[in-house]
Length: 115
Image (tube, rainbow, N blue to C red; front, side):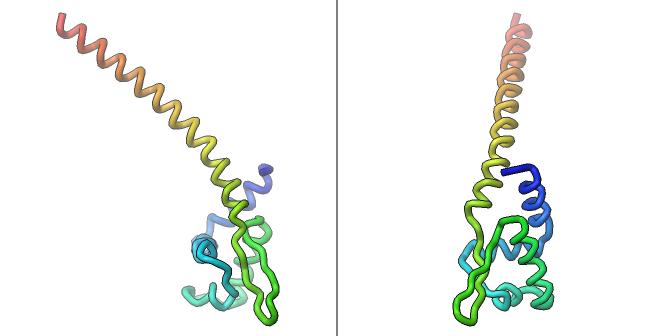
């Protein structure tokens, strides 16, 4: 995933309404009307939120007769998760090394006090 794509995705997810829409779509496709129900905003506002999520590559729309359901792109979320996990794993590794150094230091300090 390019830096620009990451920027668009994280920017899209910075909005609480869009995060709630993503959470709802994780349960399955929904129409704009279904997505708008829990919010006190217009269908046009929900449509704009969906457009931002589409531009970020997080959702797509299909046409089924009179319905235009919105679908979550699980693969896009997996790419975001992989990017986050890479840095999470690096941070965890650094913390484990620090814990080992601190444990060794405490063990050494404990031995020095006994003598």
